[in-house]
Image (cartoon, rainbow, N blue to C red; front, side, top):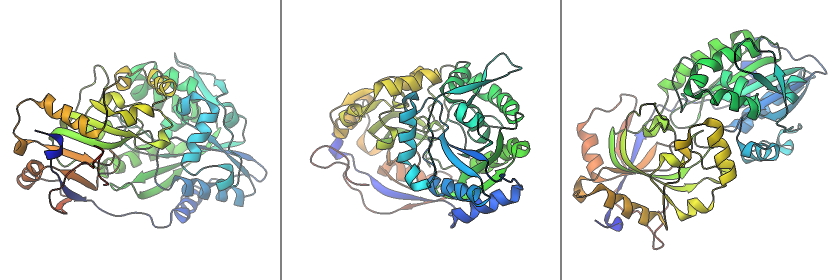
Length: 418
């Protein structure tokens, strides 16, 4: 079977659409409800990470304005471990990609990898960004969601930001150097000790709906931050989107990137963990093609090892120094391995079809998605549509066929517009 003969139909997954309409008001209300006050004249560090969070610029700006309204002097710091090439300038650029800059926020953006060591009662070291430690207080902002490396009562959220984010590259190395155990078991312990320093005054947690929109914004002081993290994680799990099928021969992903997931491809979506000793989950996908690396990734292609094929266009965007620094900080080397590189997407699909062996065209289970963050609309083969009609679908969503079969490629062998 030739790649150009592979036809797909557009379908939609209809998820619950609850969302916050006025995120600025929601931030103001969340801060007010905590009772946390920022003393007049105090310097407050606002820590923001490297994830592609919906409305993150508006949420950050609202937090900054609320702090300023109390007479304090906020400034923004990147809190992102080894991202941005583990360089101060690179981390500042990452925030700029998300619309967070001195110009848009109206306050300084101070980027440095300098840290202060905090006395630790454990067998690992604790660090905090020097700029945060020397401030009069710290506010951390992060989305809470299931982690792509492990699962536990606390995953990707406020506590992780307090440790790996605020601890910069040194803390990321310290925690990731202990593998999954360091992330699942030690981050909560480290966060509790960091919170006891009194340096962190407030955490603002964000949960998104299945359509990558802001569902909830809630804040907590240091004493209640772990409880909030756990509460929001349960809500995030309930609102996590997923592919509607449990098995695929081929998944075509238009974009892989750090702004889509910390691992480029969200392991919770594709079912591939890419960590030695850690089991994969559903769906079972035989082959994955990653077509392009997002511009916001700044060349960081962490997660490409979760794919089987990439394109030359993808390869040409890779910053290997930034990618390998992030890979080695995580210690999960399989995620940084080089997939087969095809001249274009059509060739990559040809290779995947050849790798499948003798499979009848009408039986091929294939899908195309924009990214693992955007699953509201996708393209699937007729065989997938047939299976979806006979298999149970989560009650939270409804599958709708939007159109007729169509070709995937233009004359240059690249994907047609989504």
